Length: 217
Image (cartoon, rainbow, N blue to C red; front, side, top):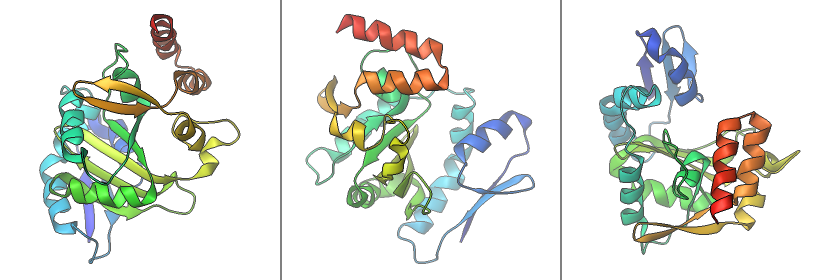
């Protein structure tokens, strides 16, 4: 079964490249195939077809990204469940108080927890949980839409920490720090790793935000 989206507005071209980066490009279409017996495939397609316009509009910053609502729902669904996850990327800085508006929620978890997250978010999946390729970031990938995009990688490839540690690899996982978000405690990578990653990317504005946060600790 193929999931496909045809982009007819040039406004979405670049964001489609980013959001659908693991899709195959075929002219004006991005598409990805799934085995017919993939769990939650039909429901994922229904959600994908209903939500992909909002996904792309949010990625293009044409529509606000209610990341707090998405994180709140994620916490409510996973509290007390046999699953563990932690935040990476810009949301990990936002929950620390950084003045940043994340475009989505990036989660990291173990391989087995990736499948469990798919079950807990089965009614919100926009892509079924599937295995990644051998050279990809991790063993499993899942995507849901809880008024904002939620993506998770399960079983991160240790090679992401070479030649230098990333902020979502094994080194970050060994050094996770708890932060408070409303009624929940959430784990995030240490700020020195996030600073180093953003420094390598040349994101000076984000580096300044991290330095300000560190100064407030």
